[in-house]
Length: 135
Image (cartoon, rainbow, N blue to C red):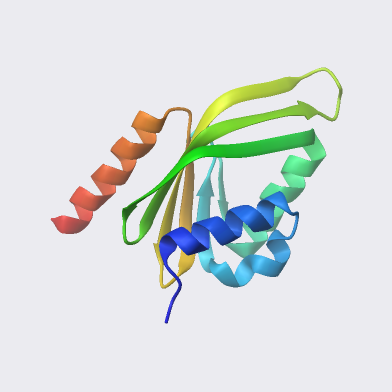
């Protein structure tokens, strides 16, 4: 039996925080899509996920993401709301902003992750995908 979307979201989040995403790729669909906060930058598949992690390491000395709340808004969709903060490798830039992440799942595996600046935008996106699926 496939694990729940919430359990997969939690396991992937824990793996990211512990620096062991590579060992958790069985929780990520081979064709997974990750869309960053700008809404344009997209990484696809396991190799794309690896590239994104390498890009993060190249740019950021520290990058911490925490969630204040996590909601399973549908059996195949989870929304996490929190903050991201960190300091760049150049020692000059910092980041500290709100973050909302929508995780879409199929068969207990992440098929799409999309980041938003605001919880309302993430929830609107999640509701719209539900409406599209129902029609």
